[in-house]
Amino acid sequence: MVGLQAENLAVNDGPLTAENAALLRPSSPSLPLSELRERYEADGYLFLKQVLPRQDVLDARNAYFSSLKETGVLKPGTTPVEGVFDPAKSHLDYPGIGAGHIGGNGKPGGEQAAAFVDLALDAHYQEWYDKFCNHPALYDFVARFADWGKNTLNLKRTLLRNNIPGSKPIGVHYDQIFLRYGDPTSVTAWVPMGDVKINGGGLIYLEDGDKIGLELEESFFRKAKQAGLSDEEAKSAFNTNMMATGLLSEFPAEFAKDHGKRWLVSEYEAGDVVLHKPHMIHASTINHDPDNVIRLATDLRFCDSSKPYDKRWMNSYRFNDGV
Ligand SMILES: O=C(O)CCC(=O)C(=O)O
Ligand SMILES: [Fe+2]
Image (cartoon, rainbow, N blue to C red; front, top):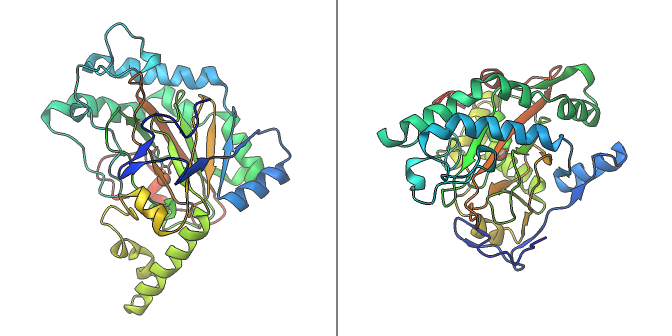
């Protein structure tokens, strides 16, 4: 495995090296549940190796890129499942949904990009995608892990994120900001759809990020209350204390340094899934895959339907859906 010395392992504002990064801790899904739960509580994440059948993930990757092929995004002579970006093209003409921007989630790109963006959105409504998002291997695992049984609800709103090499990755955030009408017990499952090299644009987690996220949330709430808002208003006012997009920062390296923490990084294999807590701070690296492989991933969110959950997440993703 290529470790932290991988060439060009970087975030928006600079390189990740042994100075400011370390490796994510992998866990086998067959470990005792008590051990897996302890890790999730202590780390804020649980990096599950091979919890989905690899071939099912590759089939979904194949379906996705087959549907986008006609836009010319793929390198001639390569197969859809490889998902190799055509080096003759500019990533600006293939903007990723939900990559550089969340919160203000309007349609990215101009005229030139429209066909690609429309098809990338369309994928969210395909049968193969619905099946993938509801894969019993993951659903059953989460139902047991969270101990929610039949109350385990897989929220319908998901984002299929295609990070083309060189495009702008998502900034620093925690998910509760976007699920703020729900109980803060939801579980996000970040699902890479294909192998992702360590410098191929995978998700990264801040060491002790759950604790820091919780502290930030409390301070946002305090500030909103001090400004004279009611509890309900304070909830929706979190955004007024941060960037308009709901992000905490566009500069992961600086953010980690300011908090005296490192980013935890990894390569991922098709079939791996990372579960993370609603206040766990994360971001993404820039896709610098040396073979120009497009990083594709989706994020699924599970919650306990017997508790309040964010109803805005019960519809499939649309542009400008206000989340
Ligand atoms: O895939 C990404 O770049 C972002 C994913 C994310 O933020 C999440 O799964 O919560
Ligand atoms: Fe997130």
